[in-house]
Image (cartoon, rainbow, N blue to C red; front, top):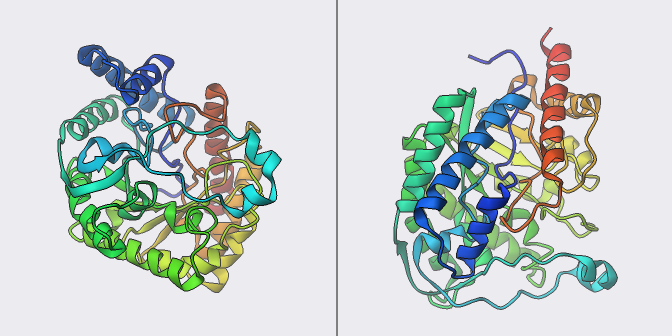
Length: 376
């Protein structure tokens, strides 16, 4: 039964507490971290972040990705076959056109190893810890719903390049088989699964910018095929997927239009689609759903709050954005969300941590305003 209002959620990552962030960075550098102290810090962080999401009005909560150094490369710790460090991909057109802007960008320090051997699940201890901490936090805070994020096969292949399989399709297939147990374990634990798939958008103007349109589209199709294979035993309505064009404040004038990729994205099995809809490069794309109808079994989680600026959106603006989508796809198929994660790496967040919570509170207030207009 529909709740009779627009629910609220976000994309997953939230700023880590300073002590936990320091531990994650130390482990990334190969330094020894007391496992007992880490476990205690992680448990407390998840409990706190879940409780605060409920407090500010978020209905469908996550664990904030508290345990992860970075949303895209954390699988390097859970899968065999990865090692060394990959070479940076070629600069995208934004960097070439605006070199002075590019020089000001802060670089993420998390290592991106390459695939140098067969990929297989290595150790599920970190996953089991994630599930345990999140279950305890959810039972205490009692949110409306709960989800955990996981890197999609295409995302892993994009960030951690192949030096072993020699064939992109084979590489994706191996990743899909190795990640399947994590995907299924999240759902079996009672949580919804979010597949992070930014590669389906950002890769066009970044790492795969040199590809022809046909080559790039084929990579996207293969990524969706791998995702579908890896999740074949999971009900579609227990899954959501997130796409974005890169969670950074920049020109973005080479972003591939949503209308170009939406038909491919809608082939993916997850019933709920999360995407950017608040930033000035993509806010207008609510119109796309008028020309490319949303399948009956799908819902959308549009970003109606930006994740790259410290502006706190006015709740009325949030409501207006939600009402646009509701007019096109139907009010029962819209969930209020954020453009992207607020802390996609443990190293830093571009937004002040307290402003993050103020933006989420504005999201909740805006969803309530939209609900008053749409459901009464």
